[in-house]
Image (cartoon, protein in one colour):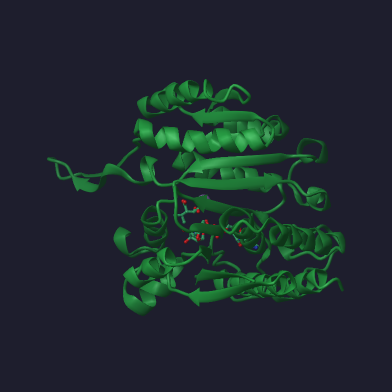
Length: 361
Ligand code: NAD
Ligand code: IPM
Ligand code: MN
C-alpha cells in the first residue's frame, strides 16, 4: 500500500466546511485504491493569528515542509482586515508559498457540459473552453522591494510596491508553461504589459527566447488589458496562458467565471522540489461562512490535483473527477452553480452525494 503524509490547512471562513468534504472523499478513494493518508492539521491565516498571534507560525511551515503534500482551503476574513500588513492572513499564505518555493501556480479553467447554463456567458462562447493559466507565484509586485507606506519630505504619505522579475525567475516559470502547453494543445499565450512596463519587456524577450527550445509549441503574446477582454469575448482561442503574479491572480478569477462559479476552480502550486500546495482559486467567502452553503467542489478538485500532480496517483485523481461529473449529471448543485428551478444542496449534502457516487451508489 502507498502511504502519504498530508498537511491539512483548513484556514478561515468556509475553509473548514469544504476541507471536511475533501478529507472524506480522500479517505474513501484511499480505501478503494489501497492508499493510506496520514493527515496532520496545522494553523494558518486568521485561525493562526487567533491562536498564536501570527498568520504563519514557524511550526506550520515545518509541518508542511515535512509532508508529501499540503492541502489548503482558504484564509482571510473581515475580522483580520484591519491588522497591519505583516499580521494579515494573506501574508501568511504568501509566506507559505515563498517558504515552500512554489513559483508555479497551475489554474485550470475547464467548462463542464453540465454547467454551461451556470456560466454568465452564452453557451456558444463557453462550450468547450479548456484553459490552463500558469501564474508566477513567488515574484513580481507581490514580493518586489521596496514596498511600504512611506512619508515624503512634505509629510504626505506615499504607498509603494515594486514589480520586478529577474531573467531566472521568468525562465523557470516559462519552462513550466512551455512544458504544460506541450502536454496540452501546444499553444502558449504570454500575457504582459510590455507596451508600458520594462519588467514586462524583459518578460516578453525571455519568453520569445525560450520559444526556440520548444519549436512544437506556438507562442503568442497579448497585453493584459486585451487578454482580459479576449477571455470574455472568445475564450476558446486560449489553450495555455503564462503570466506574472498579479496579472495571473486577476485573469484566473475572470477565467473562473467562464466555468460558472469560482466555487469550481482548483489549483496546484509547485516548486523545483519538495511538497506542492493544492488549494481552490477562491477565498474564504466570509459572506456565506458557517451556513453550509459553500460549494466544496473546488476543494475536492484540488485534492484531485494533489493526487495527480503532487503524489503521482492519476487513477485516484480520475476517480474523484469522475465522481464530480457524476453528481453534476444527477443534477446535484450548490447555490452558486444552480440554474432556475433547482433546489440547492448544502456543502455537507454535496459531500455525501460525492461519497455515494464514489461508492458506486
Ligand atoms: P472570495 O473568493 O472569498 O469570494 C468571492 C465571492 O465568491 C463571494 O460572494 C463568495 O461567497 C463566493 N464564493 C467563493 N467561494 C465559494 C464557494 N466555494 N462556494 C460558493 N461561493 C463561493 O473572495 P473575496 O470575498 O474577495 O475574499 C474574501 C477573503 O478571502 C479575503 O480575506 C481574501 O483576502 C481571501 N482570499 C483568500 C484566498 C486564498 O485563501 N487562496 C483567495 C482569495 C481571497
Ligand atoms: C489567490 C488569492 C491570494 C493571491 C491572496 C489571498 C493573497 O487571491 O490565491 O488567488 O492574491 O494570490
Ligand atoms: Mn485571487
